[in-house]
Image (cartoon, rainbow, N blue to C red; front, side, top):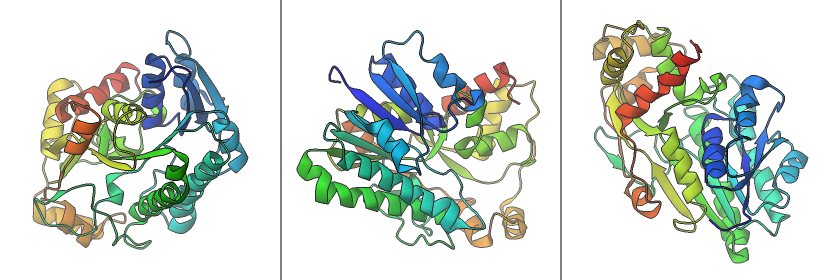
Amino acid sequence: MAAGRVVGVTGANGYIGSHIVKVLLERGHNVRAGARLPHNDERVGHLQAMKSGKRGTLEIHPTDILVYDDVESLLDGCTDVIHTAATVKIKSSSPQESIIDPSLEGTRNVIRSVRQNNSIRNVIHTSSTAAIRPMKWKNGITLASDSWANDATIENNPYGLAKVLAEREIRSWHTEEGSPRGVRLVTIHPCMVFGPPLSSYHLRGSLTILMMLADRSMPAIIPMNINIVDVRDVAEAHVRALDIGADGGRYLVTAGSLWMRDVVSLLRTAYPNHKWPKFSIPYPIALVAAALHPSASISWARTHLGTVLNWDSRPASEDLAIDWLDPSKSVVDTFNPIFDKKWI
């Protein structure tokens, strides 16, 4: 990376954002970390601790991604932007207001700020495989980065729709304005992100499914195949994309998959003193349970239970020079800080 780089990171106190900040500081770069509630120790204490012992410098800015003045202040004078801030809600009784609007408004505030700042040369946008995966897919299919979740609607997949709309918004800006100005854009699309949390604040979002196994709010093992990528690899992908990778690149970051029964087996072996779910639910019973569950549906279950979806992450491996951590390691490493710090 070039000397004198100043990287603005939105959502810097989040699970992915925090690991990005950590990598940037270890590489000796100056970081402006945007975070809501900057005096809340649970949310930001782990960032404050990064100020010592790292090669780079860290400034923590109070930033509400939905407030333009906050975003403009964060990014003023930055050379690069990594935009990770986003809602982690999958479902809501008011999806337009709580999922779609925040995703779009936050992205628009970043775009508007970049317009006003001639020093910014790179914009890295965190998206998701949810922007790529259609609602219906065939068992065993492999999806690549040229796929879009074009069938996502506010009714059937508000989270996926939000990711699609936000990405199209920033890509439209890049084509019309950013690229002619010499500003690079790269979008990063992780699947289910596991790996060590840096704060108890991170025990949500992607980690929810593991926490449900740990606290046994999911008392039995369902026949589900989980695509996994390590949060440390996701952070590396973002940081490396500042310098390498195609302008306009759309990178799937996925390492592999594990069946939930194998996830539980790994955790039981690594942490034998903790009580993990023991019993597996057969597929027919899982279908019925999904039909009766308020946050699931029979159509979701038929697509996601007992099936395998593959992702082509070779472009990210090659262009960003990433050797993915094994999903088994990501699962086990997730719980080292959780048990050490008694977060559960």
